[in-house]
Amino acid sequence: MAEHRQIRFAAPPGSTTILLIRHGESAPTGPDSPPPSWQGQDDPPLAPEGRHQAEQVGRRLAVEPLDAIYVTPLQRTHQTAAPLAARLGLEPRVVEDLREVHLGEWEGGLFRKHSHELHPVALQAFAEERWDVIPGAESNEQLQERTTRALQKIHADHPDERVAVFAHGGVIGAVLAGVVSSRPFAFVGADNGSVTHLVVLGEHVTLRRFNDTAHLDPRFTLVPEPLD
Image 1: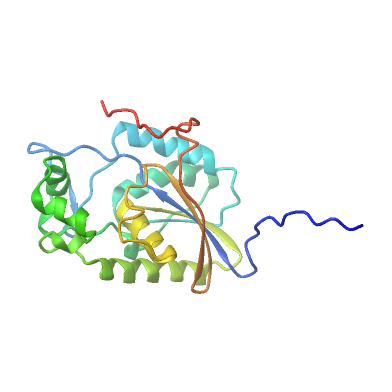
Image 2: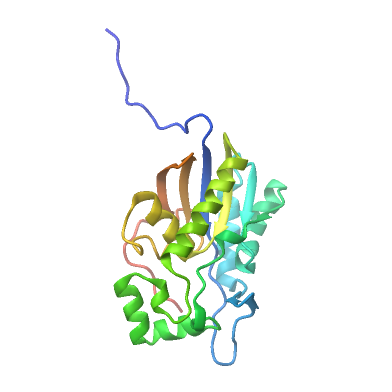
């Protein structure tokens, strides 16, 4: 009698496997240490912890058969991708449409400051799950449009290939909210250095994993360790 085993997932012909990696932890900001800027957006470098996370990402993904590496214009993604790029001998390509959400009047380190201080507008933004509650900030719709455009361009350039894309927490949240038609902020908050796995075929996108951090800490815990 014939037996039928469970069928394992396989990327369909013509699809693109995308590993979407959040950059490592970036340097802290404060009144005496404002972040550098790129075209009006905060552009801090990685903190020492972020550089360690980047090395761990590079070690984890160096065994994957990757065909390309993408980064955004912001330096924290370049620095996070660097160890993997060096191991694989690949030159990262810049995709501007995957830059972090623009926070309008709350650039210059103010978003972190107001979030830590539980500013009423910060609380409103997270309650309503809209970035443009912040004065001058990008809307969810604008963010969704450009991130979708970027993923479709990568897919068009890499059928039947595997790529690593180093991006940002707000971008990852927007991408996944669109993929699964969830609340806008349901996936905001991916850990620094985490890996999210997508398979893209035309307009159909399959989410295979989210916020994989096994390379950073093999334990499974629901309680993060406090920041020093």
